[in-house]
Length: 420
Ligand code: GP9
Ligand code: MN
Image 1 (cartoon, rainbow, N blue to C red):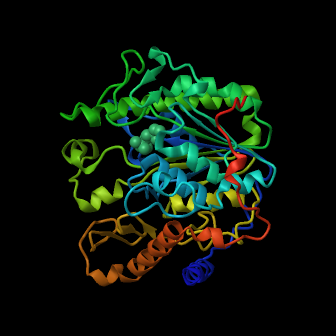
Image 2 (image 1 turned 30 degrees about the horizontal axis):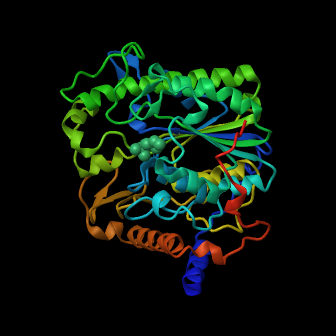
């Protein structure tokens, strides 16, 4: 209802964080490529097995002078997994308490980042080595203003190229390059990796990396598929440099959600060298975020945040104002970034406390503390999730026209034609 929209607008207005002038527009006019790192968790960064780094390339970016590396970002997806992460990153709205937004609310009105950028002259696209109907993306993407969707029909899906959920990451990036180079600049592109997906198996010969030798094949395999993904990203960065695109492009990489669920706690105790309990399982929800912006001085950022916060962070770097838009996120580079991170089930983390199942724990010891310590943040979490749900369930954005933004017409988008 319009009352709900008023509540939402008041809340968003009261919680808005101003962009940091030190970073606003520093990457103006650049292309932006998002890379969804399938099931990639922060604990892997810097980790070694038998003295060998699992992800040497991504580890090198942690120190890279043009990269912002965020080590306290948490996955916030619901049952829509990869597609929920895409949804949050594009809209700064939360995914749903049950089911997936992409399946259930794809045709809503959204003010998504691709549409915002399209209206600033960007070409918008997505790349995925599986069919376009997976997670109903061919419907959801139209509402987001994604002009071109390169799905599996654009790739060589022969047997040796495919494993588990679709095209392997190396051929995926390699075959994406010519399509990318053909896009009119500036462009927005999103690339979805797949190889590091449960149950984390690879074909013989695709990767040469030791396992931590636990009794759990899922945990063991995870390190090998993560290594393969790391190699594929390095190859892609090299190809971007060779093509000349690299200097003009901001690359945003993010883990979409956990890969190793609580069912694997026993093997994870061996890997992490500590007891796994509800507190530690919440800490494991960290997913790495990298923003590589050639020409911009990056840094390591230890602020707490979630996937909900990335859209505004990136838009501000690109010099795009967000104040007319309804956003439940908060720029991670802003001086007054808000460090309360809701999980979709109502659990949450702040720099001080972790709340799991209504129990309150102190960071970083994990010691159980009086529930009062979690009270204020808990109120914020409940309110922000409820209001975001009202927007999505009530399709409220159809009643709100941000100044300077033309509503997306889904009929303008068609992925059944040749898009090259
Ligand atoms: C495939 C990919 C699946 O399209 O999105 O990943 P999931 O959502 O299962 O993590
Ligand atoms: Mn996923």
